[in-house]
Image (tube, one colour):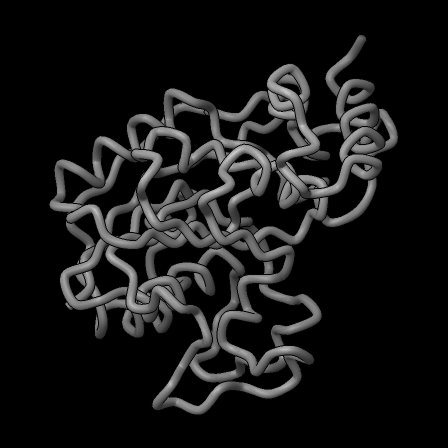
Length: 252
């Protein structure tokens, strides 16, 4: 059985089971944890946004990112994973850690909720963190900023999507002007941190490599955070050769 075929089976299984963790046996949990999303499966029939965005982070990279959080002073406080998928990146964290996650793939969001029942997982776009519930058609006022209960966070960590920033919510975020979706996740992830909090992302190398191409966004980020460490990586995804970096920022 190919991974794509296994993914389709898991999608059907999860759709029938729902997101009540009590309905999943230990063997069910092991089974659904094998899900890897649509990234890299276009030739096999994969569809939707996941073809571009669903490249799940390998375990050894997740462990490395967690260790970098500890090394750079993560204090054990609340964590935000704004593109959580099935939860690979939060796996190394202690069970008691307060974790909030966003995920637009309903199957991935359900799996994350089942695997990490103490976490708050929202099957929605990260942008909705800054929009008025329940319709998400109005920006929350600047003073309140977000409806997330654990704001401000001690750590924002993840592997955000890469590419041009244009989706169903991007028109609500015209200022500052942001060209790439990974930069949206950087800027607004940093805004959700407490002073001294850390943001650690596995992201496209373009942010560092492209000189002045993203200078205005870099300036906007530089007003609220300092970059304190960075690592250039070899290809880390099974179905993609996109060059990646681990970037570590500290909120001013």
